[in-house]
Length: 278
Image (cartoon, rainbow, N blue to C red):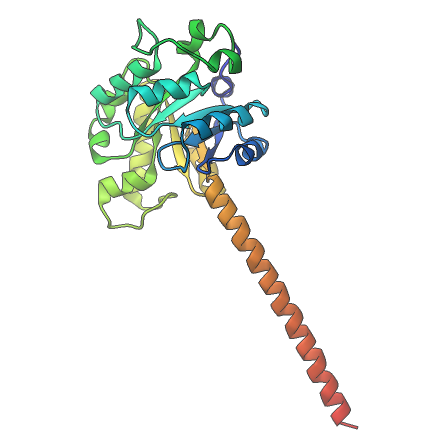
Protein backbone atom coordinates (compact mmCIF):
# COMPACT_ATOMS: atom_id res chain seq x y z
CA UNK A 1 0.00 0.00 0.00
CA UNK A 2 1.41 3.44 -0.89
CA UNK A 3 1.73 6.16 1.72
CA UNK A 4 -1.05 8.68 2.10
CA UNK A 5 0.10 11.66 -0.05
CA UNK A 6 -1.21 14.11 2.53
CA UNK A 7 0.88 12.58 5.31
CA UNK A 8 3.91 12.70 3.00
CA UNK A 9 3.48 16.43 2.44
CA UNK A 10 3.18 17.03 6.17
CA UNK A 11 6.30 14.95 6.84
CA UNK A 12 8.17 17.34 4.54
CA UNK A 13 7.01 20.32 6.59
CA UNK A 14 4.62 21.74 3.98
CA UNK A 15 0.93 22.61 4.02
CA UNK A 16 -1.67 20.81 1.92
CA UNK A 17 -3.72 22.65 -0.72
CA UNK A 18 -7.12 20.98 -0.92
CA UNK A 19 -9.79 21.25 -3.61
CA UNK A 20 -13.51 20.80 -2.92
CA UNK A 21 -16.17 19.13 -5.03
CA UNK A 22 -19.90 19.79 -4.65
CA UNK A 23 -21.00 18.86 -8.19
CA UNK A 24 -21.70 15.15 -8.57
CA UNK A 25 -19.89 14.53 -11.83
CA UNK A 26 -16.76 12.42 -12.55
CA UNK A 27 -15.60 14.63 -15.42
CA UNK A 28 -15.58 17.80 -13.29
CA UNK A 29 -13.82 15.79 -10.56
CA UNK A 30 -11.23 14.66 -13.11
CA UNK A 31 -10.70 18.25 -14.26
CA UNK A 32 -10.25 19.56 -10.71
CA UNK A 33 -7.86 16.73 -9.84
CA UNK A 34 -5.65 17.66 -12.80
CA UNK A 35 -5.27 21.28 -11.71
CA UNK A 36 -2.46 20.91 -9.16
CA UNK A 37 -4.22 20.37 -5.85
CA UNK A 38 -2.54 18.12 -3.29
CA UNK A 39 -5.87 16.62 -2.25
CA UNK A 40 -9.50 16.78 -3.32
CA UNK A 41 -12.49 16.44 -1.00
CA UNK A 42 -15.85 15.17 -2.22
CA UNK A 43 -18.62 16.85 -0.23
CA UNK A 44 -21.46 14.49 0.61
CA UNK A 45 -22.89 16.78 3.29
CA UNK A 46 -23.83 19.90 1.35
CA UNK A 47 -22.78 18.86 -2.13
CA UNK A 48 -25.25 17.45 -4.71
CA UNK A 49 -23.59 14.04 -4.43
CA UNK A 50 -24.82 10.56 -3.54
CA UNK A 51 -22.79 7.42 -2.91
CA UNK A 52 -22.74 6.15 -6.50
CA UNK A 53 -21.64 9.57 -7.79
CA UNK A 54 -18.97 9.75 -5.10
CA UNK A 55 -17.57 6.38 -6.11
CA UNK A 56 -17.08 7.28 -9.77
CA UNK A 57 -15.64 10.65 -8.72
CA UNK A 58 -13.03 8.87 -6.61
CA UNK A 59 -12.23 6.72 -9.64
CA UNK A 60 -11.79 9.83 -11.80
CA UNK A 61 -9.57 11.51 -9.19
CA UNK A 62 -7.29 8.48 -8.97
CA UNK A 63 -5.83 9.07 -12.45
CA UNK A 64 -4.08 12.24 -11.25
CA UNK A 65 -2.58 10.68 -8.12
CA UNK A 66 -4.25 13.30 -5.94
CA UNK A 67 -5.33 12.18 -2.45
CA UNK A 68 -9.14 11.92 -2.30
CA UNK A 69 -11.04 12.62 0.90
CA UNK A 70 -14.76 12.72 1.62
CA UNK A 71 -16.82 14.92 3.87
CA UNK A 72 -19.50 12.55 5.06
CA UNK A 73 -23.11 13.67 5.62
CA UNK A 74 -23.06 13.11 9.38
CA UNK A 75 -21.54 11.16 12.25
CA UNK A 76 -23.02 7.85 11.13
CA UNK A 77 -21.08 4.58 10.98
CA UNK A 78 -22.49 3.18 7.76
CA UNK A 79 -21.74 6.30 5.72
CA UNK A 80 -18.22 6.65 7.12
CA UNK A 81 -17.26 3.01 6.58
CA UNK A 82 -18.64 2.94 3.03
CA UNK A 83 -16.64 5.98 1.84
CA UNK A 84 -13.48 4.39 3.27
CA UNK A 85 -14.28 1.08 1.59
CA UNK A 86 -14.73 3.12 -1.58
CA UNK A 87 -11.12 4.30 -1.43
CA UNK A 88 -11.11 7.63 0.38
CA UNK A 89 -7.76 8.51 1.98
CA UNK A 90 -9.53 10.47 4.69
CA UNK A 91 -12.84 11.42 6.26
CA UNK A 92 -13.99 14.88 7.33
CA UNK A 93 -16.97 14.56 9.68
CA UNK A 94 -19.30 17.52 10.44
CA UNK A 95 -20.78 18.58 13.75
CA UNK A 96 -18.43 16.84 16.17
CA UNK A 97 -19.35 18.61 19.40
CA UNK A 98 -17.81 16.57 22.21
CA UNK A 99 -15.12 14.09 23.17
CA UNK A 100 -17.77 11.35 22.97
CA UNK A 101 -18.59 12.38 19.38
CA UNK A 102 -14.89 12.35 18.49
CA UNK A 103 -14.44 8.91 20.01
CA UNK A 104 -17.36 7.56 18.01
CA UNK A 105 -15.89 9.06 14.84
CA UNK A 106 -12.52 7.44 15.43
CA UNK A 107 -14.17 4.10 16.17
CA UNK A 108 -15.90 4.16 12.77
CA UNK A 109 -12.64 4.97 10.94
CA UNK A 110 -10.29 2.48 12.68
CA UNK A 111 -10.30 -1.31 12.60
CA UNK A 112 -10.26 -3.33 15.85
CA UNK A 113 -8.66 -3.12 18.34
CA UNK A 114 -8.46 0.66 17.79
CA UNK A 115 -12.04 0.99 16.59
CA UNK A 116 -15.12 -0.80 15.34
CA UNK A 117 -14.80 -0.45 11.58
CA UNK A 118 -16.24 -3.44 9.77
CA UNK A 119 -13.92 -5.20 7.32
CA UNK A 120 -14.78 -5.00 3.62
CA UNK A 121 -12.50 -2.62 1.66
CA UNK A 122 -14.19 -3.50 -1.63
CA UNK A 123 -12.66 -0.81 -3.84
CA UNK A 124 -9.92 0.32 -1.45
CA UNK A 125 -8.09 -2.98 -2.04
CA UNK A 126 -7.73 -2.05 -5.72
CA UNK A 127 -7.49 1.74 -5.51
CA UNK A 128 -5.01 1.90 -2.63
CA UNK A 129 -3.41 -1.53 -2.27
CA UNK A 130 -3.98 -5.21 -1.53
CA UNK A 131 -2.39 -4.80 1.91
CA UNK A 132 -4.85 -2.01 2.74
CA UNK A 133 -6.28 -3.59 5.88
CA UNK A 134 -2.89 -4.02 7.55
CA UNK A 135 -1.86 -0.38 7.29
CA UNK A 136 -5.12 1.56 6.88
CA UNK A 137 -5.20 2.66 10.52
CA UNK A 138 -1.81 4.33 10.08
CA UNK A 139 -2.57 6.00 6.76
CA UNK A 140 -6.26 6.94 6.62
CA UNK A 141 -6.96 10.42 8.00
CA UNK A 142 -9.70 11.21 10.49
CA UNK A 143 -10.81 14.86 10.74
CA UNK A 144 -13.46 16.19 13.12
CA UNK A 145 -15.13 19.44 12.11
CA UNK A 146 -15.15 22.26 14.66
CA UNK A 147 -18.06 24.52 13.78
CA UNK A 148 -20.26 25.09 16.84
CA UNK A 149 -20.11 26.88 20.17
CA UNK A 150 -20.41 23.50 21.91
CA UNK A 151 -17.41 22.14 20.02
CA UNK A 152 -15.40 25.23 20.98
CA UNK A 153 -16.23 24.73 24.63
CA UNK A 154 -15.13 21.09 24.40
CA UNK A 155 -12.14 21.74 22.14
CA UNK A 156 -9.43 20.71 24.61
CA UNK A 157 -11.06 17.31 25.10
CA UNK A 158 -11.86 16.76 21.43
CA UNK A 159 -8.33 17.32 20.16
CA UNK A 160 -6.92 14.82 22.66
CA UNK A 161 -9.06 11.96 21.38
CA UNK A 162 -6.76 9.02 20.54
CA UNK A 163 -6.79 8.21 16.84
CA UNK A 164 -7.96 11.65 15.73
CA UNK A 165 -5.59 13.11 13.12
CA UNK A 166 -6.92 16.63 12.93
CA UNK A 167 -9.72 19.14 13.22
CA UNK A 168 -11.23 20.96 10.27
CA UNK A 169 -12.72 24.41 10.76
CA UNK A 170 -15.95 25.36 9.00
CA UNK A 171 -15.85 29.16 9.45
CA UNK A 172 -19.38 29.82 8.19
CA UNK A 173 -21.08 27.57 10.75
CA UNK A 174 -18.55 28.50 13.43
CA UNK A 175 -19.41 32.18 12.98
CA UNK A 176 -23.11 31.41 13.25
CA UNK A 177 -22.46 29.29 16.33
CA UNK A 178 -20.33 31.85 18.14
CA UNK A 179 -21.96 35.12 17.06
CA UNK A 180 -25.42 34.25 15.73
CA UNK A 181 -26.39 36.45 12.80
CA UNK A 182 -24.39 39.42 13.97
CA UNK A 183 -22.09 39.01 10.96
CA UNK A 184 -22.61 37.94 7.36
CA UNK A 185 -22.45 34.23 6.68
CA UNK A 186 -19.60 32.76 4.68
CA UNK A 187 -15.89 32.11 4.72
CA UNK A 188 -12.75 34.28 4.95
CA UNK A 189 -13.51 35.78 8.34
CA UNK A 190 -11.91 39.10 9.25
CA UNK A 191 -13.73 39.88 12.49
CA UNK A 192 -11.23 40.00 15.40
CA UNK A 193 -13.20 37.52 17.51
CA UNK A 194 -13.41 35.02 14.64
CA UNK A 195 -9.73 35.38 13.79
CA UNK A 196 -8.98 34.74 17.45
CA UNK A 197 -11.22 31.66 17.44
CA UNK A 198 -9.51 30.21 14.36
CA UNK A 199 -6.05 30.87 15.78
CA UNK A 200 -7.11 29.36 19.10
CA UNK A 201 -8.27 26.15 17.40
CA UNK A 202 -4.95 25.90 15.56
CA UNK A 203 -2.93 26.45 18.75
CA UNK A 204 -4.91 23.91 20.77
CA UNK A 205 -4.78 21.32 17.99
CA UNK A 206 -1.03 21.67 17.54
CA UNK A 207 -0.47 21.48 21.28
CA UNK A 208 -2.24 18.12 21.21
CA UNK A 209 -0.05 16.94 18.33
CA UNK A 210 -2.75 16.89 15.65
CA UNK A 211 -3.37 18.89 12.47
CA UNK A 212 -5.69 21.76 11.66
CA UNK A 213 -7.51 22.40 8.38
CA UNK A 214 -9.47 25.47 7.32
CA UNK A 215 -12.14 26.03 4.69
CA UNK A 216 -11.53 29.17 2.63
CA UNK A 217 -13.35 31.12 -0.04
CA UNK A 218 -10.38 32.61 -1.85
CA UNK A 219 -6.76 31.93 -2.75
CA UNK A 220 -5.60 35.04 -0.87
CA UNK A 221 -7.16 33.91 2.40
CA UNK A 222 -5.93 30.33 1.98
CA UNK A 223 -2.37 31.57 1.46
CA UNK A 224 -2.67 33.74 4.56
CA UNK A 225 -3.95 30.75 6.55
CA UNK A 226 -0.87 28.75 5.56
CA UNK A 227 1.35 31.51 6.94
CA UNK A 228 -0.57 31.18 10.23
CA UNK A 229 0.46 27.55 10.40
CA UNK A 230 -2.68 25.82 9.13
CA UNK A 231 -1.80 22.33 7.91
CA UNK A 232 -4.46 22.04 5.22
CA UNK A 233 -6.35 24.77 3.40
CA UNK A 234 -9.29 24.32 1.08
CA UNK A 235 -9.21 26.78 -1.82
CA UNK A 236 -12.79 27.51 -2.85
CA UNK A 237 -14.87 24.77 -4.54
CA UNK A 238 -16.05 23.72 -7.98
CA UNK A 239 -19.37 25.58 -7.72
CA UNK A 240 -17.77 28.85 -6.69
CA UNK A 241 -14.96 28.55 -9.24
CA UNK A 242 -17.40 27.82 -12.06
CA UNK A 243 -19.64 30.69 -10.99
CA UNK A 244 -16.80 33.18 -10.75
CA UNK A 245 -15.26 32.16 -14.07
CA UNK A 246 -18.60 32.23 -15.88
CA UNK A 247 -19.58 35.60 -14.42
CA UNK A 248 -16.20 37.09 -15.27
CA UNK A 249 -16.34 35.74 -18.81
CA UNK A 250 -19.77 37.22 -19.46
CA UNK A 251 -18.79 40.53 -17.83
CA UNK A 252 -15.66 40.70 -20.02
CA UNK A 253 -17.67 40.15 -23.20
CA UNK A 254 -20.23 42.78 -22.23
CA UNK A 255 -17.47 45.24 -21.36
CA UNK A 256 -15.68 44.64 -24.66
CA UNK A 257 -18.92 44.96 -26.63
CA UNK A 258 -19.73 48.18 -24.82
CA UNK A 259 -16.23 49.50 -25.46
CA UNK A 260 -16.38 48.63 -29.17
CA UNK A 261 -19.82 50.17 -29.59
CA UNK A 262 -18.67 53.35 -27.89
CA UNK A 263 -15.69 53.50 -30.25
CA UNK A 264 -17.94 53.01 -33.30
CA UNK A 265 -20.37 55.64 -32.06
CA UNK A 266 -17.53 58.10 -31.55
CA UNK A 267 -16.21 57.40 -35.04
CA UNK A 268 -19.63 57.83 -36.59
CA UNK A 269 -20.31 60.96 -34.60
CA UNK A 270 -16.93 62.38 -35.56
CA UNK A 271 -17.51 61.54 -39.23
CA UNK A 272 -20.88 63.26 -39.29
CA UNK A 273 -19.40 66.39 -37.73
CA UNK A 274 -16.58 66.40 -40.25
CA UNK A 275 -18.96 66.13 -43.21
CA UNK A 276 -21.21 68.81 -41.75
CA UNK A 277 -18.32 71.22 -41.63
CA UNK A 278 -17.81 71.26 -45.42
